[in-house]
Image 1 (spheres, rainbow, N blue to C red):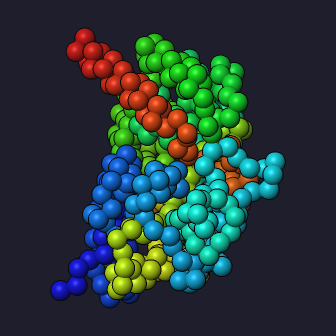
Image 2 (cartoon, helix red, strand yellow):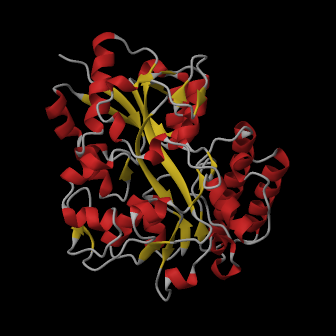
Amino acid sequence: MTKPLRILTTEIQPWRSFQARAEADLGFPLEFIEKDFNSAQRTAAFAPESFDVYDQCFHNLDIVWYWRAVQAIDTKRIEKWDALDDLSRVLPEKGTCAAGDVPASRLYVQRDKTLSDVPSRYISMLPTFYNFDSFGVETTGLDVDQDIGSWAALVDPRWAGQVALVDEPAIGLFDLAMALSAAGRIQFKDMGNMTVAEIDRLIDEAKALVARGHLRPFWLRADEPVERFQNGELKLASIWSPTIVEMRRKGIRARQAHPKEGYRAWHGGMCLSRHLAGRRLDQAYEWLNWYLGGYAGAVVAKQGYYMSASGPVKEQLPAEYWDYWYEGLPARQDLTDVEGRVAIKAGHIRAGGSWKARGRNIAIWNTTMDEHNYVVRRWKELVALAAQKHRVQRRVS
């Protein structure tokens, strides 16, 4: 019996919706090992023998590359390499480059095994899907585009006790930084690579928000905000597109904010474990090529994600879905989610407009900074404080 190709992944990958199709097309089984963001990164870095393909994001790459847990990918074996969008492969022009871990900055493997934006035959991670995130808003009594126009809303006293952030230091930290910067409370020399002093100031400001009851406990899994919005606990929160889709499916009035400062962007990708060789390595390349072939891209589009090779997606995604998710046009009819359930009602328009318009409005990319280890320690303090305060409040009530 053929052993399955083992893919270490996270919940943002809707693998259950295409696993059967992929296995039928590829002719061998797949095993998806799903973990939360932090656990997936640790496993990838320190247990490369436990997986074959590592599926996460470019901002998680530096650590696994540092430990040589993954091997370079030969672009000559990637069938759709020349079809990838520039956002995935090319550093933006000077003056338009957002802060943080721009994917192209660590995409190409150089002769000395360092990573840079200088094109070469070999890459560190194959770009897959990506998105432009901000925060979610429960819209009852609000016109989000008019009333919530800035990241500063996350620290606005108007929403005290109704705000939660994601528990991921390379993501939630920047939601906080964007909010406090937009509110004029902290200025950063380089938000994408903060100094220790800047990190301390940011965490101290956040701890004060927790102490005042402004910030609720942080969330770790993407399904958590759904219940917390539904029960009225939250009004604003860090959010991912599939969560917005799920909330709309459940009838929760939710919309992603379109902040004037720009989006926090991220880019997913896949790496090859260092142990792969022979037929096993061949199978991994077959999987990478299948993933960029259009079918998977059509599935993730229904979560609100864009695929690095968009051409094959357009060929397989029904026009009404392409127009809504990629072009930012009003939904011509009710649209379903990845499980075939109606989630988007006819006439609805995606926040922020088209794929290209949203891509021109990036403020920062999810980032693992030089002081990442220090960030993680301070971040854990903040998350623990928020959880402790919540426990105390529950006992008192």
